[in-house]
Length: 307
Image 1 (spheres, rainbow, N blue to C red):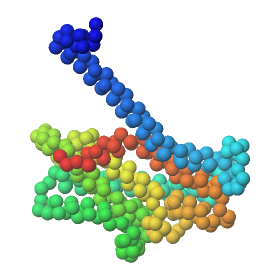
Image 2: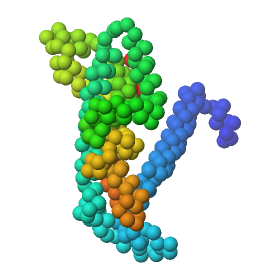
Image 3: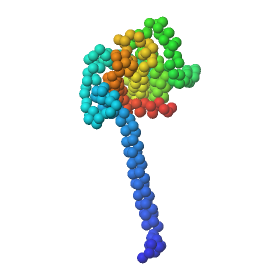
Image 4: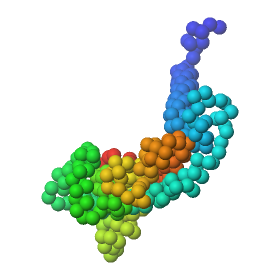
């Protein structure tokens, strides 16, 4: 029996079944292709980010001679030692004090930025007043102004207020720089929350702060985490502001100490110490980002749309 005969004798229902089966098979093939491409793209992206990190960690456990060797041997790659980290934390390099300074400044900046941005976002997102959109636009525009352009007047003002050579002054400076982004995220985060939820809390007798802390806070955690994480990472790795406002080496943050290592302030440049210091600077950023990743993504998503 020929194919033409089978086609002629097939009922409309048979043709529909064949068409459905063919479409399902094509859909499964397309899904497998997309899944393969996703896995391939994700693997390549992971390698782009992970290979430099793994290489830095591996190098930090090698001696300076192995790092600067012009004719490296395969055995040197796995000749690992903790001498670089021991020297950083036990010798007169005193990196541990710089790590402590950076932690105090970065954590203080993150907390202060999250609190002030939440309050400002609440004002922009919940209250109606003349010039609200214009004022919010001014806040957003300041994100486009690099702080390097205003660092001189900021230094003069902070010096007049006695806030130079001070961790508090550095926290206030970093908060000022990171606050526009935090306000942008938190304002849009508030606008994604229905006003009826807060109205219900007021009916139950809650005041503004009680409603904000007890009712709205759980829904604002992604936005607050985004603001805090952004401020922490920016202040943890920032160099120029710390170099400008700090002259006492006892207050130096980690980036300043690493530059001293790189410039040879303690003698000849020891690249083993330098790479180990870079790994020390990298660890808190990686841990904090991995811990807050789901909040960070959700906070950026809520801050990217209005309503």
